[in-house]
Image (cartoon, rainbow, N blue to C red; front, side):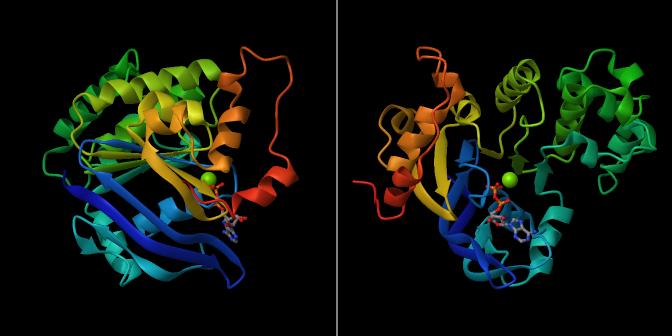
Length: 282
Ligand SMILES: Nc1ncnc2c1ncn2[C@@H]1O[C@H](COP(=O)(O)OP(=O)(O)O)[C@@H](O)[C@H]1O
Ligand SMILES: [Mg+2]
């Protein structure tokens, strides 16, 4: 398989204090969906933003390398942004409202997203409407005339996914794409991603704190804990035979797996946490 994205020994800190990412390794191949999972604050978004060259202010890459299609993008931040500008990588965020300008219609914005692509505005508008249909938005021609606030959260997230796909990216990164949605909408968006995978040949990186999303969508998964990738493997293997104690604890706390238990929500205790960083997979 062609390595689309290859991250080696990546270390990132914020203004010299928090080491948000520590020595992380991660690969995404063409055609596969990869999950990056871990609790809030484990460094997932920091790592994802480094791939796009859009690190938050104060964040610095201290070491390691990110290669996209065998070319390093870490030697200068500009380079990563050029790749993003070249529409090779597209990103979908947690809050679909932030993806859109509130004062323009969805259709006009989907045309703007194609600004670097060839074609007349009318053709781009038609592509936009077709993509809205593709992501399951009913009455897409009518919906293209709507403003972001006139759509539900789930519909806006569909539109944000349409925006990302319109540029034909080789790598689609989605950071907590279902976290802002209720469970019904979350299930619908997961279903949409599954469907899209059938004719999208690029790589997908799904960043989430929700193991259920990874189980439904991904081929492989990386588990992050306090900035480190502590476990990596095929989703089936990791879900059935987690090796790292943090992964086991995460699985035990996943609400989707609690149906057979009594009505309490387990949490990871401090005593358990004390064992995680020493632990190394067998
Ligand atoms: N803009 C920022 N400035 C300073 N620290 C940050 C910033 N963003 C995140 N952090 C810190 O970096 C760590 C990782 O955060 P983040 O990458 O957002 O994790 P996740 O996406 O897994 O929730 C946390 O300790 C968080 O507090
Ligand atoms: Mg995050």
